[in-house]
Length: 125
Image (cartoon, rainbow, N blue to C red; front, top):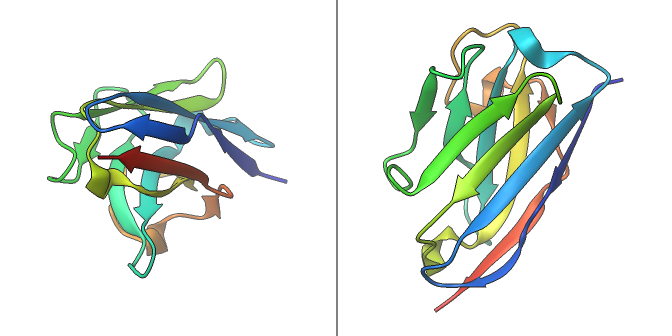
């Protein structure tokens, strides 16, 4: 059974940083793409960033480009999201997701097969 568990969320002041982790169990994800999504209250879940098989294959939403960095450690079956220069509008529940067999990370929720339970990120202004 594939499970994804996020950690690292919390409360931070605007301009600060957080690092989220997503540990994958039940599957070696070396040939899967991974993504991070977020959902703010009253809004749709939106794509934040994704990473393909190769750590060089990354994609970002325009709203986080230059501030967030996704990375993966295949030996640890873990994907990370480093978030810098956080803004109040980054406040949301952040979810990691696994897309089976995709070389490059898709941006659509429909292309992801497994999801974590989410971790809250709150940025105070």
